[in-house]
Image (cartoon, rainbow, N blue to C red):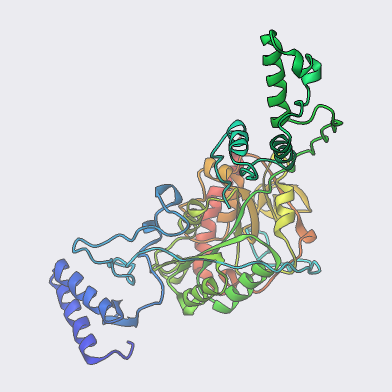
Length: 459
């Protein structure tokens, strides 16, 4: 239990009592009082736990974060309120809701750097596979501006070009001078009695002012350049489930070596990783968008599942290309641009770092050479966002990452490309595999792999 002032501890004890007698209104009111004091209360073995309020907004669950399609604008949704009109308390995923307002969006200008490619280190993976300024409106027509010039000698109306302005000035200085082009229909002194000539002369005069001088050489128009293709927008999506030092190294490399937007979802501020994410979002304005939930990862005994969390990041994203990345993956150069280039082929729906192919028995998978592959792993994977959404997003039944990234890529309707060692990437210790309880890891991996086998057998 945190060292809280005695009156705060008393409020927490009263909160426990209210919950024990199932008095939800009293419990909510006490929780709000604690929040006003700068503390959050949550259930713990043998009683309660008090923690100092986080310096950022915490949503109660992954599912409580509004999707981009639900009216979220630039990462700033409206905060839901309790029935009493107070923001919902942010710290308890199991039973108590959190105080959601808007997540903060931050950014910074990237400083591109180059790095030498490093062959990926083998890790562990699948069953039988080892891996780890607006333009102002025109306020007058061209004819109106010429009228203004004639009415006010010496004044050059806005929008009148230099040639026209000079011509107007010449006309004011020598009104007896013949209008250019009059000789085409007759002399000025020969217009009397010929109204059609007068009209024609006036039309030529007007045209000479608004278009160009008839006696000037006409420059042929330059051949229009072929329009350059618009570069797709891209977001790198990170799940933050602990290990703040890994997160810092991963994000700093992304900021230094790419211009991609970074969106990260913090699950429960494990080991202070959520606070590290908050600091990164403040350090790099408009580059890092941070979301925080009170739920902790399922593999840590919490309720936040990998598939649901990844799917939420996809639904929050509005970019053309969505990049799945692990915080153990570190860029040593711009590895995002080659992935985007690979997506330039209309048939390619996803491109990634590590590709795998099923072995002959259909039960195990092996590392694939660069090129077209059957499956991609989620260490670093870029996918067309519209295709990912059309395929149903990430497998929401997957509680743990292992094999779930493979399941996701198998469901995509199109060609998958792996770039392999051609990418300037390295992988640090994959803690999501090595630092997880082996029993949990094997159980959940097998559970997901059963779905992978069904996908393989589907024509």
